Image (cartoon, rainbow, N blue to C red; front, side, top):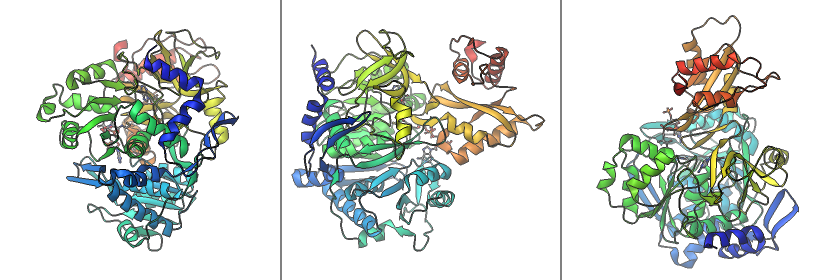
Length: 633
Ligand code: COA
Ligand code: AMP
C-alpha cells in the first residue's frame, strides 16, 4: 500500500486520533477535552474545550520562536510600483496597533467587523487584528457593489467596518469610500464606526464621529494583546454565492481551522516553514483567507500580497517576475489566470526573461483545470501542475495530489484523489453509491475534517437544508462528477445555480432577481455558459411583458447596467437575449440544465416533461444570434 493510501485510511478510520496528533503543531492556551464532538450531528465540533488565539499562532509565536526577523509578508504592487517587506516582528507590531485601535473603537470578543479592502497588507493586518481580539471578521470582495455589501452588513451586523480610500484594478482606480457610504445608507443595520486606510491615490471624505483614519488611530492606540478564544468560537464569516440573492454566511471556527491549515502546508503543498508561498488570489475569496493570510503565517512561511493581474500589470511576465524576484516555491492560482497568460504569450517568451529556478510547483483551483491549460502549463514550466478541488465551505482542498505525502501520477482533467480527512463518495439520485465511472452527485461522508464549516451564520436550518438533508449522513457539495477505478475524482460542474467565472463564484439566481426588477421584464432565466477564457460566463434570457415595443438592444444595455450596479462588475454579466418564452416542464420548472447544454453545444435529450419542445428551438436561435451554440449549426 502506498503512503497516501495509508494516511488516507487512517484519517477516515480514526479521525479523532489523526487530527488530535495534527493539533499538537498548534499552540494552545488550553488543550481540548475532546477532539471530535458528534453528539449533535450533523453539527460537528472539533477540539471542544480547547482554547487558543489564531493571531498568536500566526504571528506572536513565530516572533517568540526565532522567526522575528524572517519575512512574513511581501507586498508586491505593480499597479503602484511598490514593493514592501515586513518581518514577522514588524508585522506583529503593526497588527498589535491596529488591534489596539479596534479595541479603542469598542471591538471585543464575539463582535463582528466587516472588512472591505483592496489587496494591501493592511487588509491582512485588519483580519489578524480582529482574530487577536477574538472578534469575528467578514471580508467582502472589493468587486461587489454597495447593495451586495449592504446585504452582508445586514446579516453580519458589524460593530465596526474597515475599508480603504481606494482599490486599484489594473489601470482603474476605484474609490471605495463612496461605495462604503452607499452600502451603509442602504443597510438597515448601521455600524457604529469605520476605520479607513488612506491611500495616496484617492482622498476619502471622513464623516466626523463615525469614520476614523487608520494611520492616526493605530499610531495613538495602546497595543493590544491576544484574547484566548474557544476552539469552536468563530474566527470569521465569509459570504459565498448560493442559489438565491441571499448569500450563505460560511462560518469558520478557530481551532479546526488552525489545525487543518497547518497540516495542509506540508502535506498538500510540500513546503517548509521559511519558504515563500504565493496564492495569487484576493483576500475577499476563501483562497485569500486560507492561503494568502492564515495558512502561510500559521506555518511560519512568507506570504505574498500581490496587487496586480496576470496580464497587463504590465505584461504577461508579471507572475514570472514575482516568482523570480521573491524566490517563490509554490504558486497557487486559478486556471483562468494561466489562460490569460497563454492568450497573450502562448510561446512563453516572457518566461525566458526570468530565473525561476527556486520554483517547485503550480497549484490550481477555483474551476476545473482543463487538459489544454494543464498541458500548456506543464510544457511551459517543466514542473508539476496540480489541480485541486475545494470550496468556500470547506476552506481547504477536498481532492488533490498531496505532494508532501506521496506524489501520485497526474491524470489531466482530474484533481487526483480525496485528501485525507475527506471520505468522498459519488451518489446517484436514490442515495446509493454510483458504480465507478458513473456520474453522480459528489458528497463527503460525514464528519467533514476540521476547518470546514460547522454551520452557516445565524442559519442552522439553511445549513441543514443546503448540505446535510439532501443525503443524510453525507455533506452535499453541489458538484457533480465521478470517480474512476483508481479512485481519481472528476468534477464536472455544479448541479445548482452557482457558476464560476474567472475563478469567482457567482449566483445566477441572484442575477435573475436583479433582472426581474426591470419594468419591461415578465420572466427571465440566467445560465452559466462555457467560455474559453473565463471558464463560465452568465447569459440572460428575457421574456418581455406584452406590449413592450422598445428596442431589444436598449433593454439589454439596461439589464447589463442593473446587474453591474446591484451585484458588481465581478458578475461579468454582459450578454442578454430576448426570447418569446422560456422552456419549461408542464409543472412550470424552467429547464435551465437543457438551456445550458444547448449554449455549450453539448448533446442533450428533450425532457419528456417538457411543455412545448419548440421552445428549445427558440432558445437555440437566440443563442446562435449572440455567438453561442455554434456547434449545433
Ligand atoms: N474590485 C473592483 N472591481 C473588480 C475587482 C475588485 N477587486 N476584481 C475584479 N473587478 C472587476 C474587473 O475590473 C472587471 O471589470 P470590467 O467589467 O469593468 O472590466 C470585472 O470585475 C470582471 O473581473 P474579472 O472576471 O476578474 O475579469 P478581468 O478581465 O478583470 O480579469 C483575470 C481576468 C483572469 C485576469 C482575473 O480574473 C484573474 O486574475 N483571475 C484569476 C485569479 C483569481 O483571482 N482567482 C480567484 C480564486 S483563486
Ligand atoms: P468557491 O466556493 O468559490 O471556492 O467555489 C467552489 C466551487 O468551484 C466548487 O463547488 C466547484 O464547482 C468549483 N471548483 C473549485 N475548484 C475546482 C476544481 N479544481 N475543479 C473543478 N471545480 C472546482
